[in-house]
Length: 333
Ligand SMILES: *[C@@H]1O[C@H](CO)[C@@H](O)[C@H](O)[C@H]1NC(C)=O
Ligand SMILES: *[C@@H]1O[C@H](CO)[C@@H](O)[C@H](O)[C@H]1NC(C)=O
Ligand SMILES: *[C@@H]1O[C@H](CO)[C@@H](O)[C@H](O)[C@H]1NC(C)=O
Ligand SMILES: *[C@@H]1O[C@H](CO)[C@@H](O)[C@H](O)[C@H]1NC(C)=O
Ligand SMILES: *[C@@H]1O[C@H](CO)[C@@H](O)[C@H](O)[C@H]1NC(C)=O
Ligand SMILES: *[C@@H]1O[C@H](CO)[C@@H](O)[C@H](O)[C@H]1NC(C)=O
Ligand SMILES: *[C@@H]1O[C@H](CO)[C@@H](O)[C@H](O)[C@H]1NC(C)=O
Ligand SMILES: *[C@@H]1O[C@H](CO)[C@@H](O)[C@H](O)[C@H]1NC(C)=O
Image (cartoon, rainbow, N blue to C red; front, top):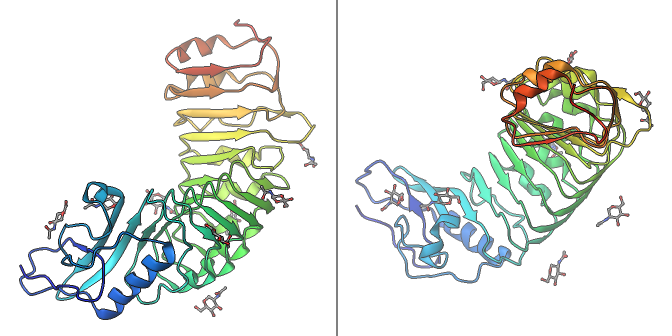
């Protein structure tokens, strides 16, 4: 197999090609695009003398290929589809211009020191996965990102992002994972989020949101993981949560609202493996059905509530659950 030798660029491309016999080559525009992106991100260990579409890493140390690679899709010509630069100590900023890489689907810059804002120009890409977890990004999420109709995963946890979530994000009709935890987002969840019915995983813990947990979450009937811990949102927990029957992992905590609520109707959430309803101002008695949730094997945390009465005898069947936290003062029946 022949591979195109990059003369000007300084990158390695992995081509996962199905035995294409012609020489596969990366268009000059994409080579130039990669060079610009590397420069903006602060990628310093480039190697100019490696073949494209080989598995020799031009990004840096070969042993770090797992977290440090480019993937391209090759027919008669190659196109860059995936940039992965995880934990590479990158100290630059996000590139504003991705237009030279029109086939890019996945950009993963997890755990670097990138600062600056998320460029609004990314709104005109056809990205499927954006992962910026664990950087130093600031500013709001640009409303233009609501235009990325191809977007499936949007992961920006553990940055310093702020401002209100743009209502345009409600247009993301393919989104499955939206992970926004550990930032400084404020305001309410936009009403347009009612249309995010493809959501599988939504996390907004550790933020500065205001207002109540909106009842629109009941529309997310495909969701399996919902994390609203210390998000700033207040109670009560909407009763429509009873419709989210595919839920496996439900974590809600630190709801500020002095009004005591009764235990939320989780009767039909029988797939739960993890249930955390900690400091949610829940009063009244523990519902016996919870004791029959046979999959609840990892964590059950109902501490810091106002639950009263005995622990129902059905809970003895939860003996396989690794961690159980109740309110102090509750006694087994
Ligand atoms: C590069 O490595 C991947 C997986 O490790 C393999 O599938 C692919 O065929 C390799 N490409 C070349 C050109 O050796
Ligand atoms: C490239 O990086 C991605 C994401 O880290 C990883 O899943 C993939 O296995 C890597 N490819 C190679 C050839 O190591
Ligand atoms: C990003 O960090 C660098 C230092 O690493 C600093 O000089 C620059 O001002 C920062 N930019 C922003 C937008 O915070
Ligand atoms: C979204 O894209 C449309 C065209 O498809 C454009 O008219 C509109 O200005 C874009 N909106 C944003 C917020 O970028
Ligand atoms: C978070 O945002 C609030 C305003 O909404 C601001 O007062 C506060 O300083 C910000 N905190 C951080 C850590 O950026
Ligand atoms: C949300 O669900 C309600 C009924 O539960 C429905 O009337 C509404 O149209 C849904 N909204 C969206 C945007 O899907
Ligand atoms: C819900 O999930 C199922 C199975 O994963 C999928 O076939 C279906 O399209 C999803 N529905 C929505 C609205 O995303
Ligand atoms: C507190 O919860 C009650 C219902 O449980 C609701 O009527 C009230 O508006 C909530 N208060 C605030 C400030 O959110």
